[in-house]
Length: 556
Image (cartoon, rainbow, N blue to C red; front, side, top):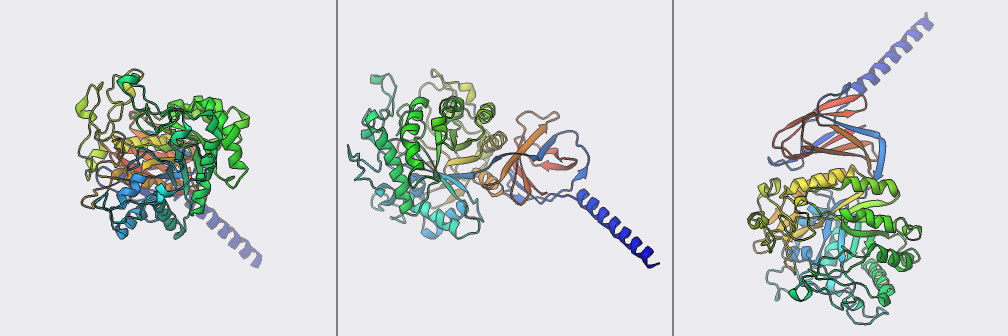
């Protein structure tokens, strides 16, 4: 009798366990759903939804956690001298609020950033390096003074902290990271140019003019200074480390195709950069105190990615020094070039693709000659106006341009939020490991910029009144950053649009070490969209608000 009772009890417990397992499987729900939308939601939580067994029909987003792809390096924005200059107009306590919003756990918690080595267009006055003594091949006069000297209130009325500058801004971000549990922070450094005396033009840049048939240039590195320039970059890494800043990755130069001499630049071809890395920079990185610093090649627009990788990554003597390739987005306001990403990832699967710069360029700039729609070319009313960022109001440098060699059809007017979210989502879905915005902070005009190349930024500050404006782009980047962390893995996704336009809905997915799946969904339309999220044999019906970015997290 006792044995029969024991058997019955064991059978009953087994049934309960089986029922509990089946119940847990059937009761899968989302962990969190976040939404940022034109209607005013800012990383707001939505009600969780329950999954059911079956195969979804209609508009379906499928995420496949078992198909792991690339490891993520993070999402973030950039440190520039212009950003530091604008922040120096705030009282330290107010400035820290902005920095916490950018780099703290309660804010965007950006994990990936970029900064410039020497002057760039987003320098207050520009035209400087850390080695401006001509012929100093021994680097005896090397100094970080330009990044440390601050800004005089006498020269710049409105400055509240005269000691604040680029390097103090970076240190402040590092202090925030050190004070929190999530300390992961990766900085990419890029030089816009070698010191002027190392280049064939012996100047920072030569602008286009009638005398040179409007063919401006930043010049090229002189052969006799190739090793000196490599030493200069190594000296920068060592000097920043001595100031408490470990640089995670470096690019030999920003935009090696040049910018027609509009501001600081220096030209490389794929072949000359390949030689420079193989002969000088690569060996100096791996054989010294910077062996952990990663090297990224190229650092310009996506349409040129494949040619550069075919030259440099196909050379095994150079590829061994290279972590990956840096890209920008200025060749189109809507194309992502995911087909190029796919081909490059297939050919060079061990090398990363990282987006190192993107912004709303030429903001508010009057149309130059050769623009057929000058009225729309020049944007207005972007400060403290969320509607600007959620609608078709932005243009770029090539909008309606008639210049030779420019495909103006690739540069239509666009929605700023869509350009950011689409680019990030589609890029992650096609092998990109990290995405960095350009200036984290600018003034209400999109500057300062010493050549007038004003741009949008996640945070814009009226330096006259002290008003801080967190643009919709800030909240979009913050939502991505908070839910896509370094070390997360991208997973394969697919979509059935079922009558939706091909640009109406975009999705990607990542999974973290705690097995939390994060699915990013962009709705570019003015209507809500009901879709099904399919996970293996289960799906959930989810509504994504009109004109919004939604993040759906599921604990697997």
